[in-house]
Length: 284
Image 1 (tube, rainbow, N blue to C red):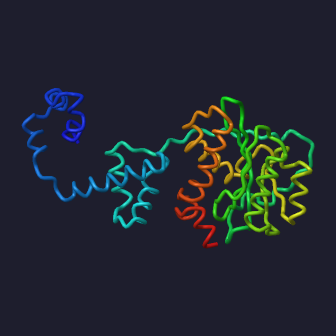
Image 2 (image 1 turned 135 degrees about the vertical axis):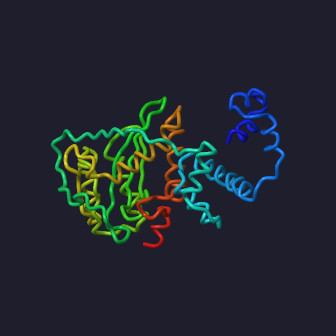
Image 3 (image 1 turned 90 degrees about the vertical axis):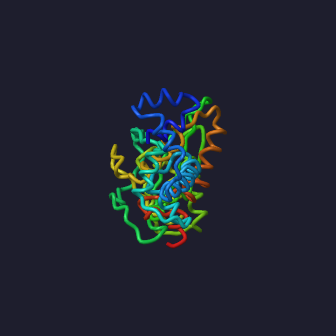
């Protein structure tokens, strides 16, 4: 490790200075530098190239479990422990999580649905239980609001909508997209929080028109809608907190790319056996 550091930084710091810093001899360093690398070292170098490429492809979002699976799917025989060790040597770490604050406008007198879901997130196929929620994205132009609808079986984002105002149309458009994509199935439990948008006449009419089963979290209890909250947490950590959006249009384009081209199609999800959501959709 010491010799490798000296080799990497010898153009910035002299070999003599680095050897003195690490209490190693220059002759020892040059002896190490000129020796023939072992097969294990060559294998590690080759693996390191693949790991760095995948880490860059996922934009620092993936840790050793997901990168290991990507490597194995590409025919690379390696363990998660080995990948974790190589990532540590390379100084590669998945983006750190941050605390996520939930805000919901539930102070209203509109009618609400019972908590039919009741934290039972289990499913046996797609189109049994969906969950929706709203979050906000900061831009230099002002807030951009994002509503999503997820299938709890595949964890896929099957409906979404974005707008600069948090109106009922925001959540209705997300539900309408989900219904269109899934060919308007009936009898699905559609869960959300008690936000005024989900309690609006327009949203309730959409639920009734398509013979869906409305369900709402208990007041102030984000755990009742944990799947949606988890998605937004992931979205904020892996994308939003890494960006600075000058306009709402920039944010919309970025969110679209993340949801449709990365999250649904390329991000392995631990809750579905580290498959991609689109894979879980297909086998269901």
